[in-house]
Image (tube, rainbow, N blue to C red; front, top):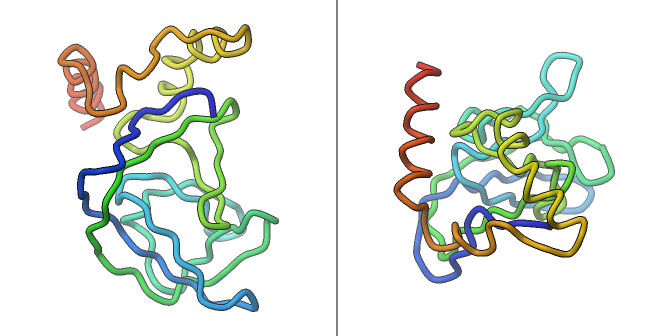
Length: 151
């Protein structure tokens, strides 16, 4: 993890609780609706918004195996974390996910974080904790502009 888009352990936010059942027992992935999660779709693995996952879909586990979704429910939980890794992938509760959400297309997110990745490789940080508890107004303006251009 080289950067956190959010690191707020106190506030309460809406999430989806995605439950699977396998030889590991009942497993739960709790994630925001716009977070990108790896699922098997047709014959390939794709990243889709968590809010699009329904019972019967298959999530990709940390070892690449698949676990079928049994239930998806809305919950409220404390904390909002958005860690970013160098390659843009992360394991959450044993499931593979993207570090990105659909709010910013992953290719754009990777490009925007390129200077921070370079700084991290030499032991520095450009952004520091600027986004931990919210976004500066300039970031909101850019994200709103990108979001409007996608619609």
